[in-house]
Amino acid sequence: MKVLIVAATYQEIAPFLAEFELIDVSFQQHSSFDVLITGVGMTATAFALGKTLHNPYKLILNVGIAGSFNKDIKIGDLINVKEDIFADLGVEENENFLSIEELGFGKTKFEGLEIKDLKQVKGITVNKVSGSLPTINYLLKKYNPAIETMEGAAVFYCAEQAKTPVIQVRSVSNFVEPRNKENWDIKLAINNLNLWLINYLRYKI
Ligand SMILES: O=C(O)c1cccc(C(=O)CC[C@H]2O[C@@H](n3cnc4c(=O)[nH]cnc43)[C@H](O)[C@@H]2O)c1
Image 1 (cartoon, rainbow, N blue to C red):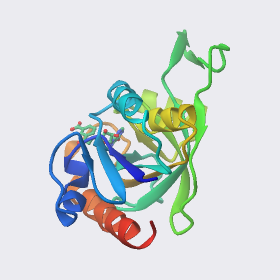
Image 2: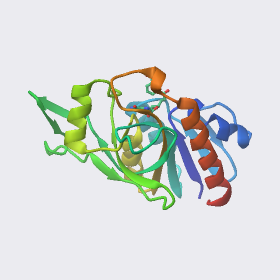
Image 3: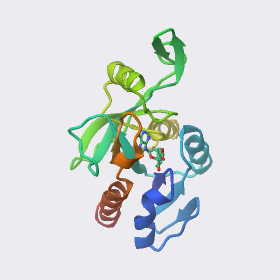
């Protein structure tokens, strides 16, 4: 069985695709792995994975960039998301938020496998990139996450449904802070992520 590489956008894995002479299409096959570009966000990710996972895979590898809540993690650092949570799926009750898990409607926390060489962190998955202090402080208090993305928990959910092992590796492109795109370094994050991914697929799979 093959590995399924999952990324939200073509840009996030462009250097890796070039290295393996692959192109910019949403699904393509290589001898030892397939590549799925889902589109940004949980809905696009779940739909794309739902269509693809009728075939069995030995491993799902979710890669991409992420925002960090933790200033000890530098922009460009690689991290392994061990636990991921649907952070905004639930109900607001005045200032409080209750997740669907707290409401008794389903699970919101999921686990991925460890990559020993990387720092393991807790992630949250959001529909809306967090860009104001009240939201950031609320998320820190409720979940104490190290990073946030827009897809991670959806990938973990689909992997669990398909009974397939899953790994999430992200590279930090920005801090989660009141929005200022000038502070982002997407280029550095993509460069570091792709160096890791190429090495992992060449020597560890
Ligand atoms: O231009 C923007 O405002 C913008 C916002 C979020 C993501 C992007 C991207 O170009 C990449 C898409 C990808 O990036 C992940 N990501 C990166 N930083 C964050 C963050 O601080 N909070 C949540 N997600 C983030 C996300 O998984 C997107 O799919 C551009």
